[in-house]
Length: 314
Image (cartoon, rainbow, N blue to C red; front, side, top):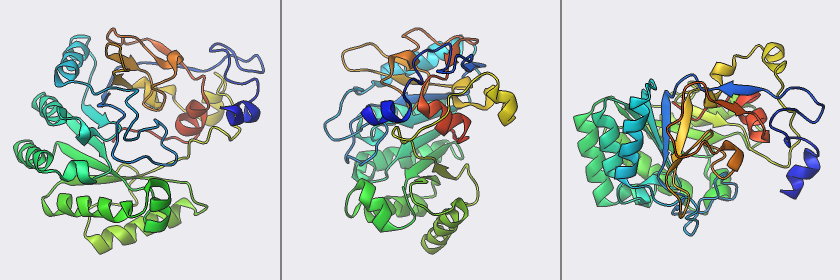
């Protein structure tokens, strides 16, 4: 936090104006198209730079129950949101014992389902495997698993996720490949390589492994910009939309919300998947309403979403 203050001193303090006194940009919710469901922050590994601080001991976001997820799906539908996709994230979703039921509930409503996973041992247990096989057969073309593969080579990936983790994730991906699952990959731009070189590296890996993933397609091979709070970033003003020729409707919080269950609290909605702990992005326990606004009052808003052009959705 001190690094963030040093790099961005005086910035991101007022949700209405920037440090220079200019009007801060906001984003209006046009309707939830992707509803994210955070199954809990517990994870089988502890990555060096996990934005949500997932680990085997962090249960700041408690396990969500299938009933709680189902109630949120009902409420969002009644509110008229044009939901097409349900994204599941964590932590590691497959640690939550009720996760298979959540997947089935989402698929049964006709939604596309995107699961963010490290494809390691929690996914490879017998019960999750049996559920995945059954659901993929029952709802063909509706289920995609996006594997967190930080780099196309083991040394860089393992430096973030632990020795041997690259090979364990590949074993999970091979099982998904052999059983006909749609896969995507989420990588990170944390090396000095240009993006075309990174994509070429992933392309070579996918070809070698026989993974049906197009490394050139940003929807199938997502390269997320680094979320470094120690880096100086500009604040986004209302004038930036025109300067950057960017439509605020394209920013992630215009079309998504994330259901979370903070420890000891009722489930609530966060405006941003990246900021579940920041109270200014807590939208409360009530169903989000079309037209509600989010002030872009965080460095991630600038670097990841507006300037980075990244989105967590498929």
